[in-house]
Amino acid sequence: MDTEIRLVDTWSTEDIVALYRAAGWWKDTYDPAGIPLLIAGSFAFAVVVNKQTGKAIGMGRVLSDGVSDAYIQDVVILPAYRGLDLGKQLVRTLIQRCQEKGIKWIGLMAEPGSSQFYTALGFTPLKDYSPMLYQPQE
Image (cartoon, rainbow, N blue to C red):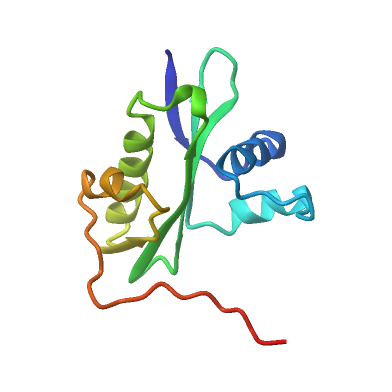
């Protein structure tokens, strides 16, 4: 399969929503109009493109201040394209972008069952740290 990874400032909202849906991260209450802002607000946004169709078959992004820390998130490859090392290439592209800008601390929150994927790329668990989510009491 002929693919390429592109760092982009914009992309088809339809493609990105399809990727979020494939990952199980999209809710019907979300407004697709926010996708261009999501991409523009990312430090780096990468898509894996099927060069024959021009469609995004994968994506990932980095959130960062551009100086000290960076967080990789929203890494997904469509199920039909998994097992081709596209996810690894995608994450390596995002890491390289951070390193080019001098960012050395790169973290992420691994989905359940995905730790081996990330440890193979050089990530290690943060011992004694707990992921937390803000959920105010009503």
